[in-house]
Each structure stands twice: as structure tokens, then as C-alpha cells.
Image 1 (cartoon, rainbow, N blue to C red):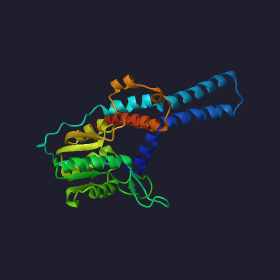
Image 2 (cartoon, rainbow, N blue to C red):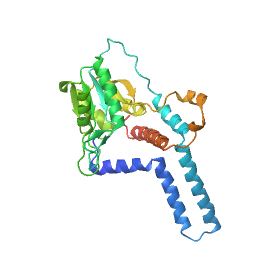
Image 3 (cartoon, helix red, strand yellow):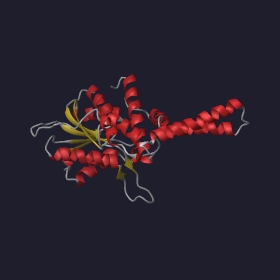
Length: 270
């Protein structure tokens, strides 16, 4: 069942509440409320706890070491497939990873770097002959109004990379992983597919597609981690510990993916 606009907006709001930066802001907001009131000894103790907790959370989740361990644990679930030249699939399914709208400064609609990486990986597999069709899955992610459809922009990118138009099929109505799976099923039915997405996203995407009847071979791309989690501690230096804004984003992606797995399991989508 596809989400109505209300529930899609609620889904986005709940997702925002899972971000580590949201936790930090909530703790600092609570500390601010205490500062604006006369401080009793009890209030002062709580103020210290809130400030220290927010600082620890920010440092922890923006640490390259922690972020790489978190997202690397997800990326290591499914390794790149060892394909034979004779292997064939009904389709290569590519999941959208975001799109940037045009505006007064940005002259055209652009795929996010995540979406571009996924399309590039899928086109490479297509050009090697593993499937005759690319299924490009991704819709309009806006809650209000009408925005660009990821699948349409991915098709344009694939065309620039040499994929002929008859070789592409679009699922332009899906807005989350579950809808990616059900939308693809409507297009090609349960089939043997290569599923292309970010390595950290596949632990959730693969069981969702499998539950819809697909025989899934993972094709991970868009890696953040260089090494397996167990190898990361072997090559540490100072810059693997110092906080970094990009690493906070990677931690956020890992936290939301794990939460997504739990939510999908609880709602019977896995």
C-alpha cells in the first residue's frame, strides 16, 4: 500500500526525529529552557547532564572512526557479486538516491551524487550484457507541491551514458524502498534481477524485494567505507578520530537505515 500525502509527511517527520543532530538539538533546547529559569541545585545538575550529553553525542557521531564502523557494518552485509559472463537477469533495477531541483541559481535539475553513482554502476552492468533492461525506480520526494521525478532524471543520465531509450523502464511513482519494490513488481512481475543501490541501503532493500517475489542478486555501489569494520582499527591515525561534518552525515545514514530495517520488520515489509 502506497503512503498517502499525510502519512508520507509523517514518515518524513519521524525520520527527521531519528537524526543524531536532532537529538543534540533537543538536548540543547532542554538546556536552554533550564538556563532561562532560576537555577536550583537540581536544575543545575540537569543542565550539566544535558550539555555534556549533547557534546558527547555530537563528538561521537561526527567521529570518522564511529561513522565508518557504523556504516561499514551495513556495507559489509552484501559483497559485490561474482558474476560469470554467461549470467543473465530479466532486469537491472536501480533505486533512486535523491535529486536536486533547479532554482534561481541551479540552472537545471540534477541527480544527487548518490543517484549518479547508482546509475553509473547499473549502466556498467548493462553494457556488460547481464540484462536487456534497466528499471529506474524513484518518484517525487516532495511532501507539498510537485517536484521532479527521480526515475525521469535517472533515465536522462543513463541515456547520456549510452543506454538506448527502449532499454529503460520507469517506476516514477515510488517514494520509499517498499514502493520501489511494489512499483517494480507492477512493471516486470517477480523475476530474477540485479538490484543496484548504495551498499548501506541493500540490507533493507534486498529482503523487501525478496518478499515481493523477486530473486535478488545484490549489486552494491556508492561505498563510504574503504575496509571491513574489523580491519579499520589496524590503520588508525589522528584524523580518524577528530570530528568531521561529513562523518556526521554518514552516521545519520547508518542510524536511519538501521531504524528503517527495524520499522520495516515490525510492519511486515521484510
